[in-house]
Image: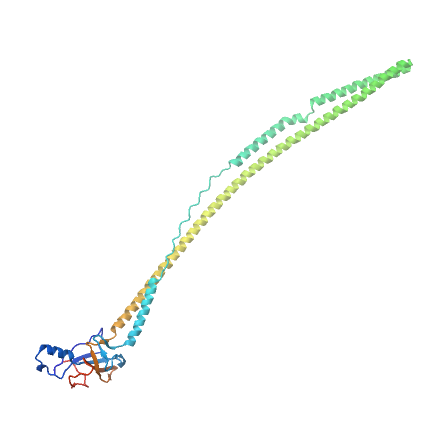
Length: 373
């Protein structure tokens, strides 16, 4: 009896797991003369496969089962499923990391330039000072020109007083003369009519004397009133000078206040500029730290992706190294020999036939593990 040997269809097999395949038939090949008949006969021959695995649970077929070419006969499905789940988990982590968005920090924008301070302008205050100085000069000039006149008596009023005083002296002299004349006439015992005439003249002189005294009193009162008015005017002029001096001081004070306010504004502007520079520096420093954190996050993500890719490749390598035996033909599992174990390896022989029950005769080598020719 002649036998043809074929290797089993497997993705990757471990060196310790072996599969032997043998076709056999009870019909002698020498008795077949027709080539087509030989080909059909070879295709219908039962196929014997000797399998060596790490666990009998790796066998995925049973007697009487119909299988097709490429169906799995042996496979470590538990380990393969475990590694497939691990590969799916790693792939999911990789996909999630790739989809994870790491926002890039916004670069701080330079703050807009502040408008420069307008040039200092104190024209209003300086103009007020000039006006106050002019008013003070005018008040002082009026005071100087009026002081001498106001400190002396009014010539017209004084002339009236002197005239009234002179009239009083003349009347007083006349009165004295009339009195002496009347006493002299009385001593001479002149006629009563003469005496009455002289007495009438004396009364008239007394009346004139009273009028002269009244006129003098009025002139003196007028002179006093003029002096009081002059002093009042002098005092008002002095007050006007003091007010003008006060206005000048106030104008100068306003100018000084304006200059101090300007210095304060300039100081505040310089302080604001320094604060803006400090804030910009802080923003730049914060942006630098954020960019460093951003770069570190990118490196960490790339490192994690690299580690996961290494782990994924390792798992895929392990999956590819799991031995798997596939059926080289379509048929039925006719027989599965009992397992025999040696040094942790389990061996069995299965027979695949084209029909559920093979009619080619008995197999003289059943029960033994065939070896390659």
